[in-house]
Image 1 (cartoon, rainbow, N blue to C red):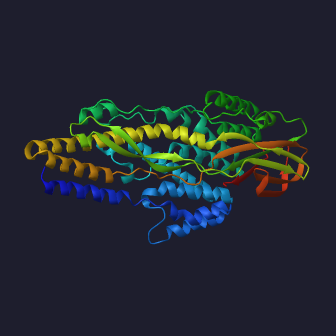
Image 2: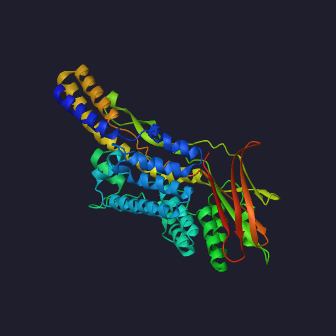
Image 3: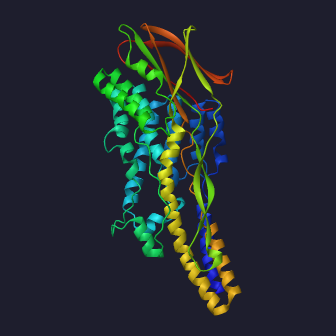
Length: 451
């Protein structure tokens, strides 16, 4: 390979890198993040709208799913339930379209760097958008609509049931598996080990489903959801490390003549993606090309200040809320399968590039000597390394944890205070006055603090 050809390859890969490097920096979200930290979610929504009106939009067309997710979640927290539903439904539609498109992609289209494509959404985003849209429907007085959203997750062949099978790639033209295609193109058959998803039942979805059924008067369906909630805890101990909250059992057994006030609270911010370097040894002849650094997305936790949540009713009755679902743990578990898929695609893509570079380097050694071959190998590896970057796109405003609590009361109107503690200090407080608690229907209060 001549020096001229090497420079052409290097220039092409650097141009590709420039195209990949246009992802929005986390600093660009500072106005939104500041409003979220202050629990001023309406201002956070306005910051997104203002960001979209700039000459260079905060969310590009390739990141439309991120836009709809972030805006839809913040609208929900702000109480704009109709707008939230519209945006979350748009996100869901685009996620489904992206998945359908991925099934029909040929091998080489399938393995190209994800940063060159429209953001397809993550499994955990597709799951939790239904949770929040269910709450949107409930807040708008549409219990059946809320149950439809829950059933999208919990029904047979629903989203949770499909998680373990989503990443079994088959080439649409030949039916060959990812490993088969990789061996054909590179001669290497040993691919990185894939991780299976160990999450198929959400306690949060089941609890909300049970409450919606109870509110609709369907006690038998509610019983099934409560039983499934217990099974979720038993089957997913890596996620549900705590015991089933007492509030679940109390919700099932409300004394005659009394009414149940149920409370759900979402706290903290979910993990976000960051780029990490992973080293892999490759089976090539030239020593410079025998080790590669892969740039892959990994999840980074965001620490929450909240250590305890206290509910005070009418200034007298108080109780602490209990952890129902560690949403951050669900995000980590469901992302693991996609990470395996990303690793496999990156590995194959890198192998194909390195095959070409290795052939060129060894041929140059044969024709022009060791030094010329070394130059070719170094130039090719440098160009390939800088042309790759991890896809760190995702929704930024999912909560990290879901807590529940409740109290049985005589029917009537109450004041409710929710105190958020860090250690022994109250760092935030939500106050609700004139909360109607009735025996007929569901009484569900929602509080959000993402500190």
